[in-house]
Image 1: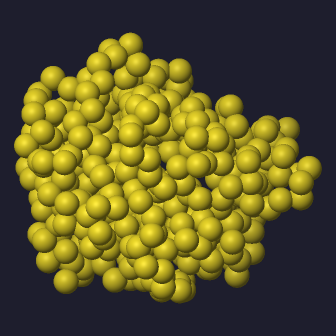
Image 2: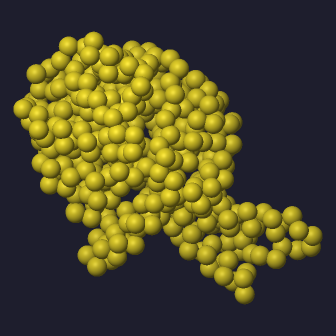
Image 3: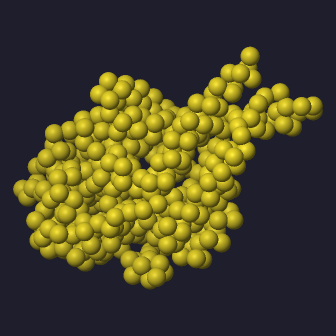
Length: 412
């Protein structure tokens, strides 16, 4: 009886996985973004910063050199519960606003953004759109040109391409970078090519001001980007992925820091799945909207990963027991002509994504350690399930300053 139940569960999760595999084929190609509109949109650039004294200056200097009319954008740094003098660094730059917030009871980027937007609506100067960055980012100088283009073409929420500024710092930062290249190419790009909704990534995000005033921010979970994405999709507003608008994010160097970050993501993901998955799936079924059904499947991934881990652990443990296996694996009963190609493609997706992204050849060496990074998602996900009500925000420490010229120089 349990064997049959386990087999049914495997089939269901195989179908969910097969859907993503099929989807990934549509990420093998891309259309280059074009810039046809002159600068017409004004921007408020918000930088979320909590004790970011070490890196915030490099980002401000970067943003002051954007290839966009300087009078058409302003920079606001949210100095959120800072104790290290971040605001003092910001004030060194003429025309850049240091917005200090002190609320120890509401910690986290979601709360900081909500506070900043309310302050911004009171500002004497109003803007067509809001762009959000993290303080440890660097931004391609043509980023606002692409955001202007998408806004002029009617898009109301845009996500830039999240690249990595420090993939060579350690095997952990390399693994994080590889993970992002994979997601950009084989998760985000297919959805863009097929007209599905893309998903926000926490930074490099652009929003039409009118939309933010209509909806309010309201995303204060540990994964505020995913929460706001789902709220948009429920309203029929589908975020758009702009492949050519690059943002370079700093990845954790140590395994411990990466584990804390990933634990926060998975805790937040379980929270969002519990609150939004069934409503958005049901809405998609009623409206016959595959975009919303796809969104439901996307946010189900936390449980997909958790249950996949439990099934795999059960089957591996069964193999270690004396005698013949007690439980059937779907791959053992599937025909070889189907099981082998699917298994091979699943393993080859990561190097394929790197090849499509034209990643520097030196990073391929780091693939040796990537399986360790991947498999550590399982215990992290398992622990996150039982601690998903923990709303503590974890802060990543920064040890050195990297500038845009260094990042772009290493990629050539």
